[in-house]
Image: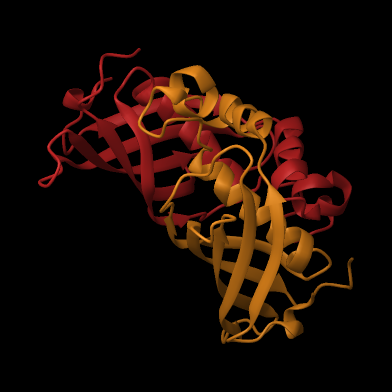
Length: 149
Length: 149
């Protein structure tokens, strides 16, 4: 998509994408090596009765879906931050995660009209339609760029 | 550390840790494959005049430092979410990132006294003391657990 293709009220869906046990363990060993993310046997005796994904991996999964389906080929060049992140329910091995993006606001910067600003809410739900991620992120677009794709 | 070792007002420091170009590209290929994270040549001509790390990787670097220095061996078992994330400045290949954690609140749940709740602010700064990450996260501790470490 291009910046001009986004509009407030739009609902963008992508996925589902499968989360494998091996990817949960690999991400956690690198980034979040807590036993309930890396050690299936210990996690089975823990509060979640099984391995769960790092919350940061859940964010990364949503990012990957957003890039693959909506940002790739756009004028996107980064983000200043995220208004909030909620991890209301654990992500487990084998989960199929569906992405929903709700476009909240699309505008050009008043001080710099070549700067496009997109504010959108990302949610991931599992196959039982239980929400596992909810966040609101701002994406920036360089509308002065020469066309890339 | 254990939950009992945290107290409001505490400042926890860790690092620095080095961010290599290869780790920026590897993380981005998996999780955030936008050209300014994955393609050094294109990024050199882009708005940042060089490759920058995915913001989610910056969060993951802070998480890794928090786990290695403060959460490993604690009763930590997860997080319900993050109040906000700010990425005020790009992270570049070769950056040395320093972690600072400010403990904002430490309490037990009033409805479930075996649930420990830690609210802390994490910041990463580069070697020029420029802030590249600022977030506030809540960590949960299972104070009924049998001792793990």
